[in-house]
Amino acid sequence: MSGRDPRFQNELCDNSSIATYLTEYADRLRAALLTVDAQALDRARSMIEDAARAGRRIYAIGNGGSAAIADHLCCDLTKGTHSDDHPVVDTTSLTANVALYTALANDFGFESVFARQVGYFGKQGDLLIAISSSGNSPNIIAAVEAAHRLGVGTIGLSGFTGGGLKGAAQVSLYVDANNYGIVEDTHQALMHILAQYIASGRDR
Image (cartoon, rainbow, N blue to C red):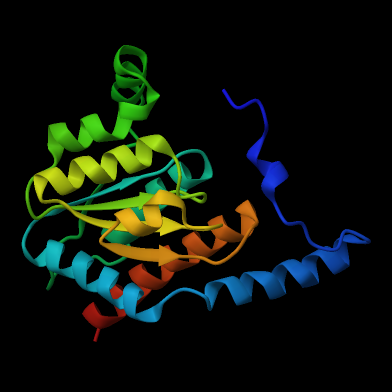
């Protein structure tokens, strides 16, 4: 264990008052969102829609706040884009089965909790969406590597320097920000943008 809470890596806003913190945070959040490569975002959208059309499954992974984003992403991509005239976006969060997740962590180590599940479930043509604010979580990188070995496509959401995930994922949705809250909020916004954009195309 490192022993140092990652929150101490945050570049904080002006805390002279909560009003000034709010204003600066909002400005920095907007700026962070606009650092995302729109062409990469469109490639991610295409990969999601291609997987749905082919009847393939989309898996999502993350730790901590990113685990919550992975769960939320699966909800919005499946329920939020549903249309009787289009194939379901079939999603599974690999953080959601607590019994399996903790059994793998206990028996094989935390670094393998996602890679093992990718190995169990992943099939060629499936898609893995990997979320890591630092981009350096070992269990996230291991899962991306496992996905590549199986022919599973990969989309990576990262922040700070991008870490190993920025270069490892086939499509990188990198957020140029150095605050965990802003990175996570931007990842959440990207999730909503993808789901709403896909839904809007289906609802025409």
